[in-house]
Image 1 (spheres, rainbow, N blue to C red):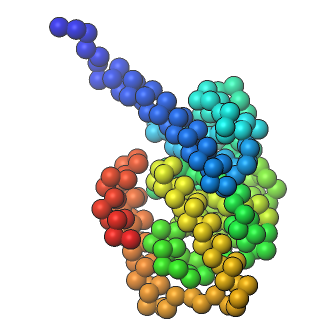
Image 2: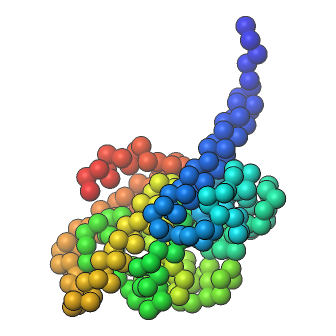
Image 3: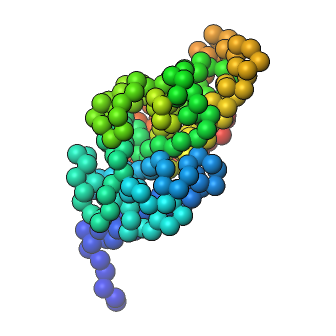
Length: 248
């Protein structure tokens, strides 16, 4: 009979496997963002919660196309580097502030897509104009107050504007979206950008029409139920939510 790992050893191996998997996912999603036109070069930043250890986040000034697993930095809840030789993203304070305020969030993506940035520069808010923005993003999308990049002020402004929603425009900067996983956060990023595009283009022809109040109320109830499910779920609860989300 071969050597059998103790429960503790098996747990450590499992954690190491998960960390390697998440590092690989960050790189993969970074490349997807470039291909989708959400960022260019080393713009934006991606982070994911590593249970029991801290948060993995992309480094500063490293192109996504050239990024390797060892370039990803592991930080604690205060932003102290636990492992990695790179400097963590300048926007690390925003990511950590979101995780602190939102226990349902396991991944955060900050990007610079064109139409979201237009909305952010103009300091606009987008009312509920299409149904899918409510159950997935939480309804009206707003722009945060301005703050210097990397500052605690900006982090606080973004978290305040985000509230319990899954996307927010960062004043004169871009977009932040969050979710229960990197897949979820990227979907919310793409959805917010599509909504921003629809809003900007429709505004050229007239005043965008909001959804009827009864529809907004119904969709908000769905969002609250989904939000509560995620809060009660464990890390990366996508399998548990798949049937529920497939209704939309």
